[in-house]
Image (cartoon, rainbow, N blue to C red; front, side, top):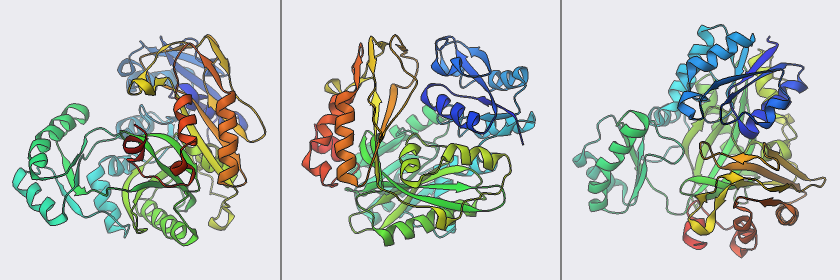
Length: 446
């Protein structure tokens, strides 16, 4: 058990964690950089500590400073949220070494899933379907060409330690592969400190469908059904919905069982997400496992009626999970639009600045997870996410209508946002019919 939680993050996820802690009667500690002195969550925490300058590497990514803040504040647990140090095994280990509960998976699970090639091999051993390919610490040109010829082009080259869409390249023929191989290795070395890469078959019209899992410290793992995350640009998600328009009851059951099997095989005891690629024939393949809370967790909460962050914290306390698989429902349809400070007319260029007007939408089926307000300074130092606009309807058609109205009501002035993009997306007949894939936005909307 613990009583005081340090929230090792910023933005809307810091507020989300704070609310879950308060619901459980826990005290909270907020950390902030010198660029975030006016952060909204700092108004509600019990204690607050500055952890460094605006640069993430000197503040939110500074393990020594975060651990020091926990010690100074008397925190006995740390919640990392998502991004920053959330999947950093060294940070999880540092928490444990300093008698802090890390509200997340074990360092061993983080290490196993943090290496995408190792995760792929682990899931294959557990019986989770994977795409055909090869993993190698030193994938040379001749081997890569031989494997690509056997698989058939296109193929995908990915950094084993990659994430966030970095360190990956689609190649369509032998010449592209020869050129791309050293480039991906160099990018992987620069971004992740390792040239280890792997190669796998690329699916041209795949969907990105993920399964939310919950595990406790007593060996129990369940799933909370799927989320559809195929509306992306450059591998960055823009819109998510639950359930997926492409998944029926049988496929949902099989994907859920595979996700639980994979998570249980590594002794997973927290909230996490198994990400799959779904092809046009209904075959699904393991892509990666996100060992943390996801940005898009609210849509699962809306259709399942379960507070995922509260469950994650209770699991970290050592409580046996009270939920059983048969308790997990699927009520209606939920959609999330990421409201980023970006100008999609200018290739999604970030637009930092001051929010001069902020009027969020409302209504009984509308949820806005945000850290912003009128006068808030959108910093160029961090992610451009301003808010997650989430709606819930009785079915997908109703959810689309509610989302359109909510977007029209959402007034943000002073910075450009993705609201015009989302309105354009919702008017598209293919999107409305649920006919899209991971490359659809780039191929059909621009």
